[in-house]
Length: 323
Image 1 (cartoon, one colour):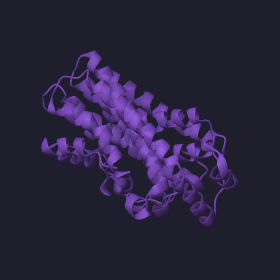
Image 2 (cartoon, one colour; image 1 turned 135 degrees about the horizontal axis):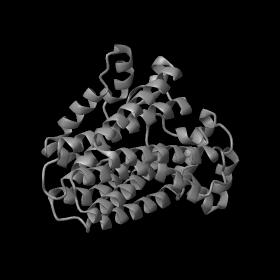
Image 3 (cartoon, one colour; image 1 turned 90 degrees about the vertical axis):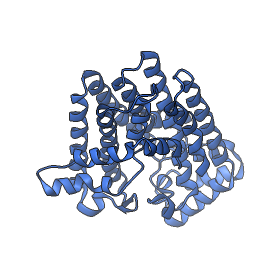
Image 4 (tube, one colour; image 1 turned 180 degrees about the vertical axis):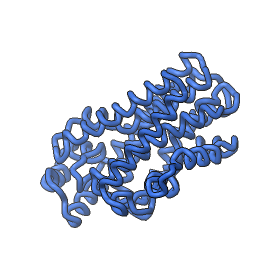
């Protein structure tokens, strides 16, 4: 996916380097082994999209991003990375961002504890930014857990209701984008109406991001994604393209339904992917992602005209370009 308007803005403002330096500094520790574990996915790369969003949000009134905005953004990124460590243990994943996962390289116990360390470091940074930011981040971590639990409740459930899917991604993905945007507005001391608009923008943007990520898990390749594709199907996580294929009925839905409800062997996974790709589930899910992108843009209207606001306005639909 291409979030280029946000990344371009951050690059032009010199913020990308500030984020990377602060993020690496945040995971340094006196224990070299723990430091290596904590930094593993951080040094592997990634777009740093959540802290970028925080810094762009902090600049919608035209001023530069403060050090507080950088710290708020990396607190969000540390929560994201810590949650990935935990997710990879749950999913038994072996590859992410083109490298071995922490659990694959060092084991589940180390991955869980390293993830906990990242969450604790994020909380420490948030606390230094004040009670509002600390409380917001703590609430967001709870929302991530709620989203994951909602997903787990419906594992291998081929009758998973679509509201369950939307609730799950709203918690496990959109909540952190929303928080990243809100923190930017808070530390920049923007008017509350603008802070609330940034919050709603971040939520809608996060919904676009996750729906498109779920589409790419169906349509892309491991080489492009840096992680296995079709993994959700194998793990019994039925996302929007799959649900829409089932909802459409007919022969394709019946064939797909016959495969679901249990772990899939590689040949069964490939067959299920073929069915979803060949029918209208992907197209229908993409329409929903576009609707969320449109919704995100409406919230930018509350913000003052500025280069940062223009980057936010362009960002949701830019995500759609690579699908």
